[in-house]
Image (cartoon, rainbow, N blue to C red; front, top):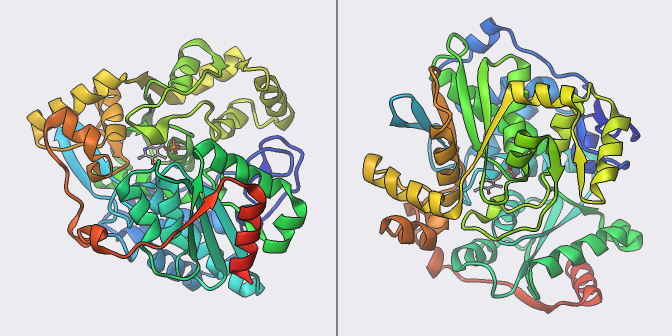
Length: 460
Ligand SMILES: *Cc1c(COP(=O)(O)O)cnc(C)c1O
């Protein structure tokens, strides 16, 4: 299996190289040269299998010869062993034809664990074979940092540094990053805001001397291996509802388009999916694009579903690549136009997008009202991201079952949830002692040189 860039001008890589590289050298995103397909019989044969076995069968063709079968099975088993639910991604019923796919049973209570836990094990396996060590540095406004720490803690061939804005993440978010005792975890509280953290990270990657010295690596949402891990639960949930004999639709609370793109990959692989519904909050660039055909940047308005507060949606480029007949030069040109704020999508490409995707948006008021209404009607307590999707899903219910992705546990957003429905959501039992655990982090000034020398000292 070979991987090519969406902008057509970067080296062709294998799975291992694409995973370790992340962003392509031409600024594009890596995608498989061809999408492998599964027959209806192969899909049907997965019904009733454990999540890990479905994961193995769905992902195997993408991995090529990077890992042997037994090695890859071991990687998957270790990735999901720490989840708090045997089904890993269980379904619950919300209404007559509407189901919630609970993706929040991982160690940090959000769906990003599905991808991060797998990528941690994939990195470790590849690096130990190569005899290499890398330094993962990430900047977080709260959630991704803890998912990365949980994924890489205790792994021999990786150190993980997470920069977060001191005093500006929630207590739960901070404690999730600062309580793991493993010595390869370094939580750095930067005296600045999230933009400062991100700017520092960007400059570290731009400093080639530093980058090579510490073997800097990133695991951001454009990494192909992260998308791949997310394809699995589209299969497992659809199988539970009768696929491949019955079609299903999905509604996905969307920010960077990684999660819903995984649904698109599942459909291309042969899973019978009627519609993929993009649900956005008030930061609705994708919904506006689907309505108008113009992809136009606007400022970000902070919302109660912060993981969907985006200005541009990076993984959307992968979908555009396909609907532009995989012409890298065309995508490179659109992305160049975006530098001045917008581009227009051709009519043919828009038609193809609308064949596959629908979209909707939820305002802050609608999100709050949905949390309240669902609690009253069904007893389910939704996190704000999930509530955005439930609201949009209800506008798209059809004859086939609708599966709405529930991307975070409500206890991660207690204030918004309590304000909406009066329930203070409790942390699951396995985390109940989070506030009793010892914290360990370093406060650092917002100063690039100090940050770089601290990282070098820690690695020495
Ligand atoms: C990251 C995230 C999303 C958005 O996912 P994308 O892959 O960026 O579209 C939605 N909900 C939660 C809770 C998240 O953490």
